[in-house]
Image 1 (cartoon, protein in one colour):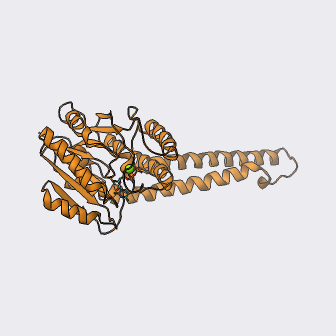
Image 2 (cartoon, helix red, strand yellow; image 1 turned 180 degrees about the horizontal axis):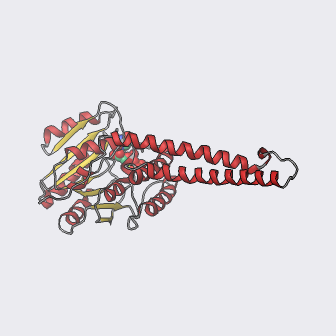
Image 3 (cartoon, protein in one colour; image 1 turned 30 degrees about the vertical axis):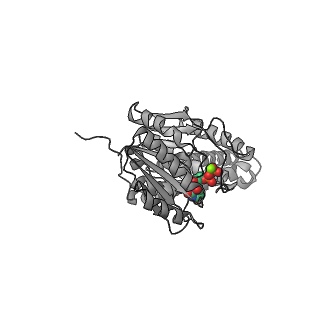
Length: 316
Ligand code: UDP
Ligand code: MG
């Protein structure tokens, strides 16, 4: 099969018939063999009824229904597991992304060797309260991930080589960072394509302003887990030992200072009268705690089932 289109959706009953019609038109025109995987993320409107009706009419349409709302990442994850096409394309269900982009996305993966092509909504139809924080978020993600050629990490419209979606695990709200996950899984050809964007036609956005806080925290954890997930001691241990050493050196100095003042018969002075004493105390305590945290994290990761999970590209 050429293409799997994976569509996560939550309460999008009005858009679905229009969207699937449009995709089918494009596929027919270019004679692709395809499937459309609609993942209903626990909608409480008539979305699932619509999907059932569509499924009866067209066998290319596959419906997956969650019992409750788990979030876009979960929906993508399940869609990725089910996908069978050589190229997997994700798009939002709200008609903001255009299926007309599919042929070019497919061509870039299939014939031009790209691993992942991410859409860039160069001209966006979203409110300013969303576009401005998004710019900031993208700049931070670019510099932290070293993927400098992407303007827009969180575009719903993306195309993947099948290997990519079978290698990355999207969970929590990590759908914003799939290109970063792909890079860490070892896929190098991550590219961008300028895509058409439309205003939301029906319904309202499913993400509140909390998205930016969550996005930022996810960014931190993704980098931490990516870099130190398999060797936490290198992070905690290093800072812990450093902090401990600073405290230790200061303590030695304080003792030396005290002995010298006794030897010279200077007037009596309490060690605790010096601010340095408190500094050394704090440094030693924090250092020990960080070290122990690293040690425990190391034990946890040793027992993790994925501790020896590596992505093997080929064996001959
Ligand atoms: N979505 C989902 N589960 C959720 C929230 C959103 O599957 O919990 C889907 C939603 O139906 C849409 C896509 O994710 O197909 C993008 O959501 P939305 O258009 O609301 O986001 P925005 O365009 O405002 O970023
Ligand atoms: Mg949208």
